[in-house]
Length: 348
Ligand code: AMP
Ligand code: TRP
Image (tube, rainbow, N blue to C red):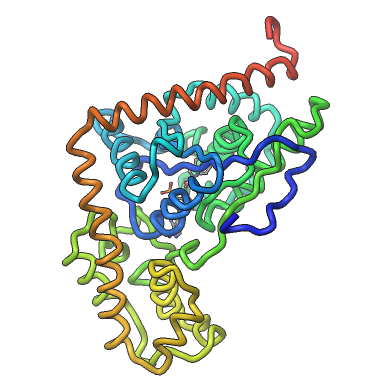
């Protein structure tokens, strides 16, 4: 495995390894999604059986305009393909087209404990001051995520750092299910694949905030659909400090904005931050930013262009998603049938 060596044991589970991940169709994708998730998906598909879905059931935990949702789903699918996912290798599908996700999520809601969900920091962030007005789905969101993963008995989940806690919950649910229903090794204990300089890309305006689709400033992020001028302009305007780049990672770690830009450079060029520093230590941002802008345009502008091309043929995208959903159901349905037997349902 590129991201994790050696492959960790997955409890008593002895089945095959599988990768699963997904992204919500709830707004424009940005550089954080690309480096934290999409690039890893494309790399992993060559190494291991890979399932990548569009998390539209998760998206509706907050309001989504019905007239726009299907197109948002196609846009994520286009981004997957533009980032290099190949439908001949990876299974690519919309979550809502595999109804077994929701079915398993219900059973998992009866396995997970309230105290576990109470600890989830993402719910606290997303619900903000209006907890009592949030949807119930926003609260149980991580349980559906566990179902997404375990329904395919996925062993590896490439995600950005913000998803770590949801993966811990998934492991707890797998363990409790296996224990309660006396089925040791039925579900694996999936490992998050988080490593690498792109796992936590920060805002270009504030090195202490995550790059996010919900940031009101468009200058805080590079969108995958930004053209070359927009990409270069945003990097040139990115917040920095007046010091030249330092020699060591320890010094870099004390300078959030510089650290972020070096991390982006490293992730886009497939190098480590130390290697980037070896080239740029002692140089100011006057030299570093143009180099980063050039690299970002070279790597990202073609992705946006490819996305636009793919989105002009919705029929082809829909065929890919429908075929992926069919393949996904072939794996998901037997898992749910076995789960229903273990739970003891009539007719199972
Ligand atoms: P979301 O758009 O929140 O559904 O996130 C989709 C994927 O992108 C998840 O794997 C996230 O962990 C990842 N991601 C989101 N924001 C960032 C970021 N700023 N840096 C790295 N990864 C991110
Ligand atoms: N919660 C993830 C996010 O916000 C999206 C997601 C839903 C996911 N189900 C998943 C990621 C299963 C990995 C595996 O980014």
